[in-house]
Image 1 (cartoon, helix red, strand yellow):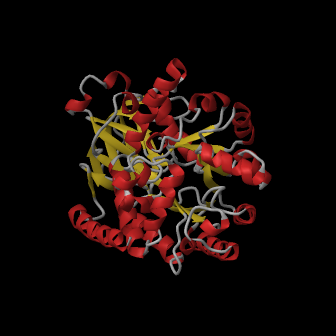
Image 2 (cartoon, rainbow, N blue to C red; image 1 turned 90 degrees about the vertical axis):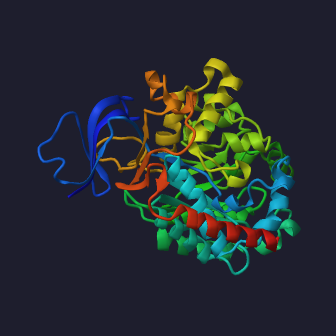
Image 3 (tube, rainbow, N blue to C red; image 1 turned 135 degrees about the vertical axis):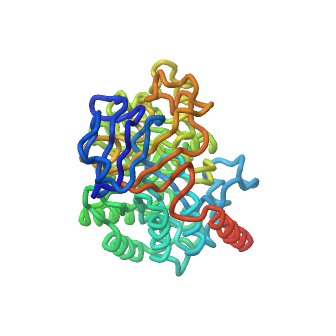
Length: 457
């Protein structure tokens, strides 16, 4: 039996190869997959669906895909002491809080961050977790997957890592770094336990040493070899700040990308968060090697890191996805907000060379899915995963916007919660509310955990 039938969808923004926007079509979902898009009734269609939704007043979009996040940072956002800092001092200050992470903090911060993402149309979340206090290893990854499953979110975890503490020339305290051998053992265990390589997987894993200034060359080299032997992808922060560039030049006598390339960190299985300070020649190398970039505009603005050369990347064919980055450098978890910020930032910086509103939508859907290697995510068509969200047109905030429904989320923007989010064919947000948990009860519990966590600092 089919799980879901969306009847008479007012506008269906497919983001397919032909950029089609369909009017008044039915969408049939079975076993987590879109099986049919048709105009007009198919015999027996309603009878075979467990749920039928009238979508005649709705615009339907592919689910947004978040390509870089730090969910644990949800519990260290809006802290007055770091609001005017740039990246390096910001990190040093916050590590004194993050070193107190435990399983409960990671579980509730993940619930909070992913819940906000789902309520704002994001159906797949990639999280970069790299802070592992002594004695807190596999259980932190377990907590993240448990939170994703409770919400019904499609989840990509990265087993992040750091092996250089302050005494070794890095930024984090000793209590949150591990040896290369410990990291590799845990990385392999996490992949074997959770990574599902199937096309419609709900769980996947990538390996993600934190950054060139908090990990050793040995860890980067060995992580790349392990990831490729296990068939998983590679992720890290790169070219985020001028401080990072100065660090790699001083320590390795190379620019950041040159250094990473020397360690095997380039190619279609690699994507970098930020990528602000690449040169024009480096952008060409990224395009040639099919190496991806996760664009994090709000975080980059808040930390005064700079503006990524997104118009040039898109022109050259660099794979670009969108991301919210850590909740402590954003300070939220909404890709809808990120889309409008990206649109406005590049209009200001690049004028008519900037990507348009629909280009930004495709960056957050198809572009992001490509970076994660998910061919069945990112657009709406038969055979694709049933991940999408819908917004009612009959809202005051959307009056007069229907001339370009493909661009409106970036050009006009959409504030608030979407009406319906579907992941793997299941309704996980209905009328703007999460279906998998009691929001008020969860918020109360999460705030209690947050208060205890900050008191420990």
